[in-house]
Image (tube, rainbow, N blue to C red; front, side, top):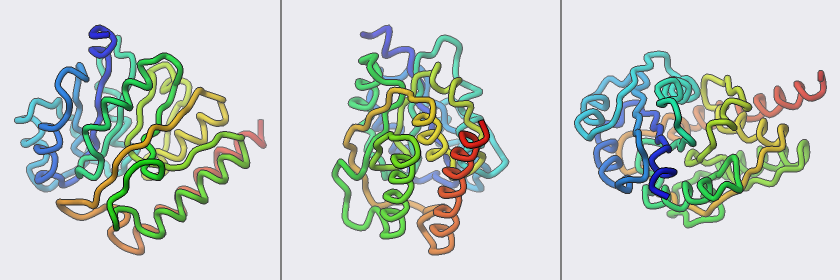
Length: 236
């Protein structure tokens, strides 16, 4: 079990999260990951310095975009790594859920494990009405198009490295998560969900749900990404 656990990497994209990244890294269970990567996605604060002082490998990705940050983190993963976990930097996700998430992946039964906020405990106000509707619509479309059942597009997720290679993820921004799930459904990867907790942001400001404009833009991006994945099937 220790050898298997030592082959997992944690990737945390971060933009101006100096206040939260230190407390988050302090709460990551000891020994669960052989590598913790914080991707500084163009921060104007001390995110990188705090993350480095907390023991994380820090990657600089100045081009804004959630997907770009995730890809930059993947490029730093050490050879021989078995699986990768993605987690947001704002402490909305509970680091205590990293154990059950990786345990599901470590079982060998799954290629992709999604941390579902819908199935877990959500703090009041942690998900806006637009976020809940976007989740419902996107997961319903994935089910209708490819027959895969998801309840959430949450940021906390784990994948085997061989699944990452098969997915060939390309989206540079907030379509990253839905592209991952749509392609996983299309390729019929073994996917499951585990309940996770979700909290209101304690520090800083959300890059998506903090404004109506940001939420709408993210919703449109999600729908466009699902359409592109479906169009790939239609053209094949």
